[in-house]
Amino acid sequence: GQSLEQPSEVTAVEGAIVQINCTYQTSGFYGLSWYQQHDGGAPTFLSYNALDGLEETGRFSSFLSRSDSYGYLLLQELQMKDSASYFCAVDRSGAGSYQLTFGKGTKLSVIP
Amino acid sequence: DAGITQSPRYKITETGRQVTLMCHQTWSHSYMFWYRQDLGHGLRLIYYSAAADITDKGEVPDGYVVSRSKTENFPLTLESATRSQTSVYFCASSESNQRSYEQYFGPGTRLTVT
Image (cartoon, rainbow over all chains, first blue to last red; front, side, top):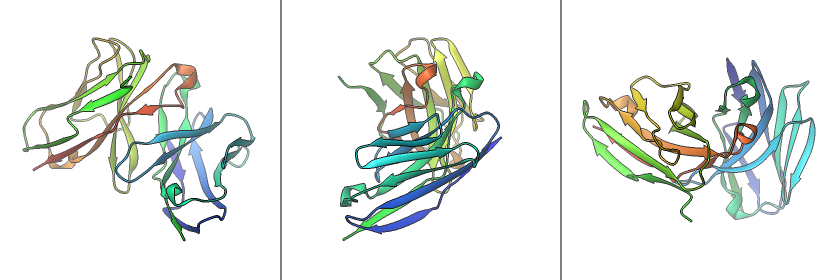
């Protein structure tokens, strides 16, 4: 089976940097995805790490360490619109299963 | 270009009734998925489909039935609704197996079973 752990809530100040961590235990692993979901909205894809290291997409970066079964999402220059829930998800597609397993999400509140 | 749509957006039904949630995508994506989202549980996979006429169970399939006669449609049926199936249901699609980590979600259906 698989399990993912991420903090339930994080609060950060506008303009600051915040890191949302995700640790996972899974049988079969191909990569780690991150999704954003605003209240009442649908999840939207942010980033994917198949290899160890940092992937940067504008203000958002995502990091993966396979040896530590750990990843994080880094949000820089926080804006009020970044207030949302963030989900990490394990990708096992290479195992013949086209599934994502999601963590329970981290609710980020950006305050002025 | 509508992308991926779900209907209805809101539904109230009674225990024991059958209800079908519709999902339609215009991208011709091969893979489609149904999730339910509940407080404290995140997104949990109910069923998925790799192509027309190919479906498989996810993490929480009990009480649900799916079909996929056409690539663009992936309806989810609750055969006999129970209160525990009150949830927000999301349909999603992805382009290919190689990119199944990037899924596109519909707007969701909020289902209440009374």
